[in-house]
Structure formats: structure tokens, C-alpha cells
Image (cartoon, rainbow, N blue to C red):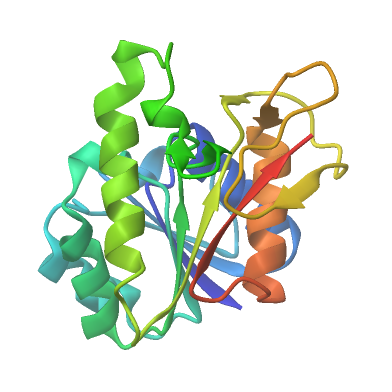
Length: 203
């Protein structure tokens, strides 16, 4: 497949690039400084600002899927959605956040007592992106939210998938590695099972 990854040099984006290349896909890596990525015969690095949606349109054209892996506060939801729509690519996947996941019926993690103030603005921005996607009916979008602790770790391939509720282990821990998150998202690219839906991944 031809996959465009926006925000390809970040913690998550770089793992998505690696995972996609390991599966033999052709990847267009898009970032402000994408050329710092290691060269690969199946990798095209494009320097671009995702905040300028029109500039992405010609770069995205011709791809089978677009993955957005950028911080929510950096770009208005409609800018990327509009850019993907105008490019003619129908499949749009978004690296979500844990803040919008439910910890109780009707209660999002970001609204729960004790949610760290440091991450609140980004979590609320992520919730706004999900709300915007849920109104989109002309793109085959998917958002994958990580567990509460999202960190560098091992590529194990052993994890659980969930829906809109935060996943936790028996001892109450909620976490997933960047590497295993990348597996789950590329699995969804290759075999879509959550079209126009949000799902989550955790141990």
C-alpha cells in the first residue's frame, strides 16, 4: 500500500513509519523536518507544515491511506480533515489520545478527578478532534486511542483492543508501548475493522 504519515518524526509517527516499512508498504513521511529520517528505498520524506492544509493536498494525492500523528493543539481538526478530503484519499486514520476514553459510563478520563492539569488542554483538543470526526460521513476515518500511559517500550505484538472505555490491567495499570500501538494501527490500515469509529489498545 501507499501510506502517508503526517507527523512522521515524532515518538509515535517514527514507530508507524518503521512498522509500515517493515511490512513492505511505500511510505510518504511528512513533517517539518522529515528528511532527518533514515533513508529507505520505500520511503519518501517530504518537509511540510500540517497546519497549512492546502499545502498537504498535492502530497497526499494518490495514497491508499493517510495517518495523522500530530499533537492536537498544533492543527485545527478541520484543516487536516479538509486536506485529506480534497486530496481524494478516502481512508484517514488518527493517532488519538486517552483523555477522551471513558473511565465510567459518560465520564471521560480528562474529566475524572485527578487528571493531570499539564495534559488537560491537549486531551480536550483530542476530544474535539474525535467529536469532529464523528460528524464526518464522506471519509472512512478511524481513531485509535492509546492507554493512559503511552511510552517507549517493546514490540511484543501481545495486547488487547477495546472500544470507548479505558483499558486497564488487573492491577489497575493502563499502558501501551509506541511500538505495539504501531502494530495495532497498521493492522487496522491493512484490515479495516473500525471504520468511522474510535477504538483503543492496551495491555
